[in-house]
Each structure stands twice: as C-alpha cells, then as structure tokens.
Image 1 (cartoon, rainbow, N blue to C red):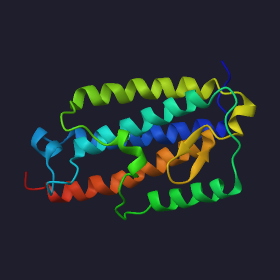
Image 2: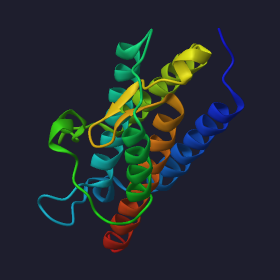
Image 3: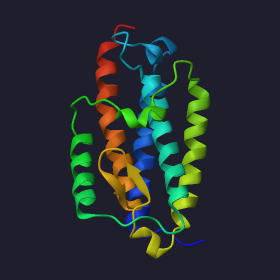
Length: 180
C-alpha cells in the first residue's frame, strides 16, 4: 500500500476532526432534537448527518469507478472547484443539485446505523486514498455535479468545505431547538 502524501494526510485528518466535532455536538442532543425540522421541507440534524454520509459514499464510489486512469481536468473545472469551495465555506443556503438526488436524506434514517456507516466509510476512504498512485493524484477522480472533475486533493477539500457548510446548518438547528 502506498503512503498518503503529507497534504492528503492533513486533509484526511482535518476531515476526521470535523466529523468528530460534528458528531460530538449532536451526540448531546435528544432524539426529539435530532429529528426536529424547523419547517416541513427543512432538514433535521439527523437528515444532515445522513446527507453527509451519502455524499461521502457517492464520492468514494465515483473515485473507484474513475480508476485506474482518471479523467483530464480542464482549467474551467479547477476554477469551478474553487467557486464551489467558496460557496460551501459560506453560511448561505443552497439546494442539492437536481442531478445529485441520490444524496438526499432518508426520512427513516437510524442515527446509530448512520454513524457506523460513516465510520466504516472513512476507513474505506482512507484505504482508497492510500492506494492511489502518484499519476492518479494528478487527474480528475470525482465529478462534482456543478464544477466538474476534481482531483483527490480537491475532493477532500470539497468534503471539508461541505462539512463546514452543514456546520452552519447545525448551528441554525441548535438555536431553533434550544427549548426542546
């Protein structure tokens, strides 16, 4: 197995730290609070966690299907990735792209199962990243529905920005559920 580059290792460790903080925060919440939706069409904290796991699952599947060769990345895709990162780092609300409907949360998600899936998925992701060859790190391995092809480094940066973005949502939910 190939060792992760130091940049990828730091990115992966940042993801793990963000996940731990997210789960530590929500682990203190009651079941009622985890399932609370401020409006009928809004997401609960549990929906957010389910969505985060589904996005990571989709990313891992996409990377696996792009191997062994990957895809060339155009300049417009690099710029698009930067724009996606900027949007994801902001608190503005955005909708899941229509083409990414498979990452929408399920109404009947089980919190314990979701966390186990996330833990297992991170082990799978770490093994996948460690196994990438240097040439594979330079090509597009994940096609984001808005920006296009991303390298593995960009994909991890996207996941980090995505977690941060949903952290804002969690903060809004926390404020809305203080009385519960």
